[in-house]
Structures are given as structure tokens and as C-alpha cells.
Length: 193
Length: 98
Ligand SMILES: [Zn+2]
Image (cartoon, rainbow over all chains, first blue to last red; front, side, top):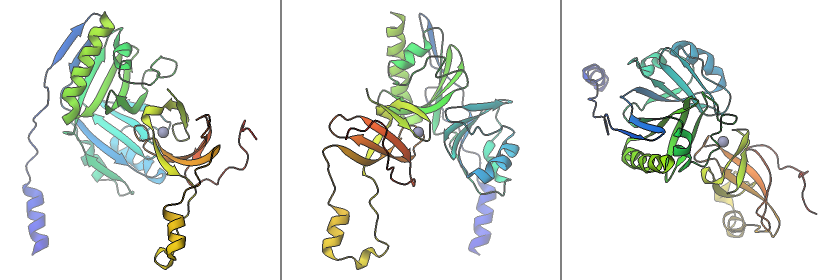
């Protein structure tokens, strides 16, 4: 009976309602523009070596194996976070969690679409703006286009992805997003000065 | 700022991304309940606290999140080398002062 009830409720669960944090906020300063990005589908993926090929096939993007790298295909980006850990972001509304559900190889995929907020930082002063709170070397030699890393900004943890030579995507937890956007806004004004 | 080489990220990263996790290579007894009070005290509380070379666990907390081991000089605070968790205690240290 318990089993039947569980099955029934699994079918009845409606999709979670979106309540985006800081939706649509933007800030422009000389040389840098900040924008809160639209909602995206995201998963936190953990998997051993033996499962990577099957998961890559199901997700349609090859999970990167090299530290501090990412791979992107058809609106979906896989970011290397650790030796067995990836952040997968889908910006075209296709849930990567559903794709992983079809994979029988050992893995753990956790939906974190609503946990994160993405903020774009673009313009010639983008790196200087992020560097005001992030201690990593963001020169193009060391942090090239496509580089991705979990790191820190000020007092909080972020995931940083370089999308172009003068553009970054900052991913942070939604409860930190107000702090991150305010921090970047102050930094943008400093970088412009 | 100190730069610490993470053996999993394969590069030096700023110290703010890391967290110290105590002395390394301390083996937990497989029969911990059978330990005498004296032996348990040694395992649980007593650390070598050397002046000089120490083997420590570190975690790349705000990076790849992995634990690894580091050899550090407690006098100069210089990191001599780092290596992956589970690898044996290195016998030869690069540039170590005798
Ligand atoms: Zn690391």
C-alpha cells in the first residue's frame, strides 16, 4: 500500500514554481555591465570514471576531464568542478536531470536549478571587476575562454565561467545573490573609476 | 597571499580557497573500541607539532573540494610539496633544509 501511494504521489507532483531572485536586475558602469541572467536548468553531477561516457552521451555534451575546463553544446554547458564532479547548466529549457535519469551507470544527479542565480559580467573591465573579490589569476593565459572554476568572491563561494575574453558568468547560491550583485556593483564602479 | 598547489587542480591556487585539516598520516585503529585509554589519547589528542617539517591534510574547500596532503615547514610557512590523498608519505622532499 505504501508503495502504491508513493507511486501515485510521484506522478501528481507539479513542476516547481519559479520565483527568480533579483530577476532582470542590471547595472552599467564604464567598461563593464552586470546582468542577472534568466532562470536555467542546472544539475550537480557526481560520477566515477566508468560512468562518464554514458552520461556524456545522455547529456549530449562531453563531460570535461581536465581541471578548470568546460564544454558546451546546444545551449548546455558542463563545468568541471572536481575530479568526479560537474555543474551542468542548460539555458534552453531542457532538463538535464531527465536525461541523466535514463542512464543506468552509477552516478548522482541532483537538480539545483533553483538553488543558483547566474550573473553575467561583461566588458573590458569585467576581469578587473571580478578580481576585486576573487583572488584567482584571470589573465587570458591562465584563465582562458571556456575556463571554469569553483572559487570565492568576497565572502562567498561562486562558480566562475569565462564565456568570452571580456565576459564571465558568475554562479552563486540564490541566498547569496543579493550580496554578490551588490559586491559586483561596487566593484564595477571601482573598476570604472 | 600564499599560493598552494592543489594536486587535483594541477596548479597553484590562492590560499583563500583552502582549509587546513590537521596532521596527516594518522591511522585510526580498526578496533577503536578495543583501544586502551592511553592509546586512544595518543591517537585522538596528541600531535607531533614539530618545529620544521610537518605533514598535513588540507582541503581545496572552495575549489575542487578534495582533501589532499601537504608538506609544510612550520618555521618558514613554506609549502615544500603537495600530493593526493591516499598516496604514501614522501621520503624525498624537494629543496628541504636538513
Ligand atoms: Zn583543487
